[in-house]
Image (cartoon, rainbow, N blue to C red; front, side, top):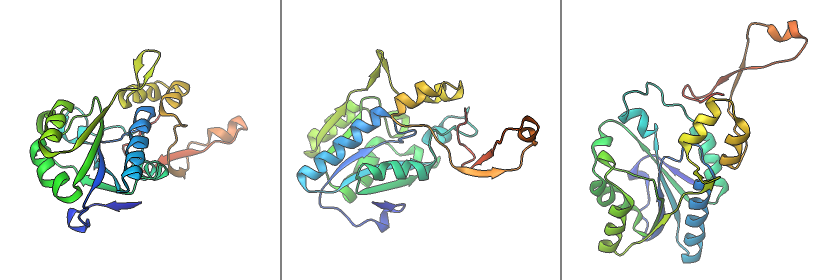
Length: 221
């Protein structure tokens, strides 16, 4: 899998299948999108591309988040994406300046000239561009104008409730790991360093490990 951080480092593709999104906490809904992207790219014999953002856009545009809690850090996210067979991941450095870019500018200045998508696949609740104006209906119209096939993937449900990163984040915060793991489709995990704690484990005659996450924004149960 090729990971790109700058557009000038990207070899312009003559065609591709593209998905766009934050992919925070890759869950069962994301699984369906990624499988579809890789399947269609393979069938068309063209590269599969995921365009994502770092840091998470909500950390930049939503003032109530000093540090937006992440279900997965970037390394784990990329490892998971790679396991699906995605060919290229373009990671956009998301800044306040970048947040001002309109959906139309994003499509015409980033997606079209560098990736030349034949098909774009996103989830029903994905939005992009200034003011979240890049809605599924916007993308459908853009696809009609530019001869791009647009697939909108419906949400995956659990007991009639939509699986989402927000919902999973709440489960983890409450320590409801069984529910979180089911909706993730895998076991929640973190990466970090073992650090010295207060030594309570020795008093309990039970070994413990104090973990300092690699990412300062890592969500913890």
